[in-house]
Image 1 (spheres, rainbow, N blue to C red):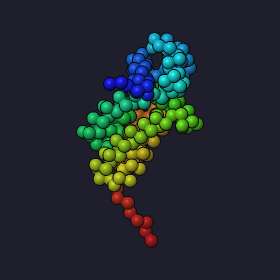
Image 2: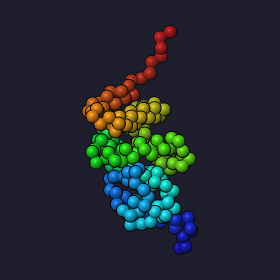
Image 3: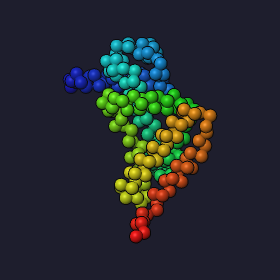
Image 4: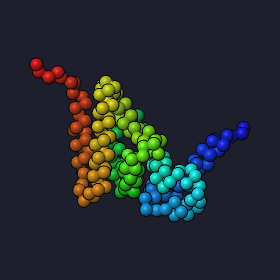
Length: 198
């Protein structure tokens, strides 16, 4: 079977991405690192990095997308066996581990860049609904209609990300009760809507 140039390019990109992930483990390169420094660490060339990812933000976005995909494998297992609340706790614990700090910082760095140039980060942006979809499916399983389930999941993920950003910006401020607060806020999901009194 003869591969097209697009398929060969895709395979080469995947191999290069695997090398990046092996070289940095759970971490992400710092935004202060140059492509040359990253290339040296992964024993490749900065020209190849630029060809396959475009720029340092492109490298970060591709690595984050793949790291989050790997995280989701464990989170999907929680979603399959547990409740909405179980998954919220699992997400919070997964992203507040000290070894995740560089990735959480990198996530907000790339999100900030994507806010200005969404067309350059479309694949990354499209991957951001994964946790929302998981939570929405659990909320539906627990009795919400599809629209309410999606709204509840969207607000819950926004709260988690907002509290993670707060921890990055003000690490001295502890959010020990953050999960309890998020879960209390989401408890309204099981309360049926009532019409306002006339």
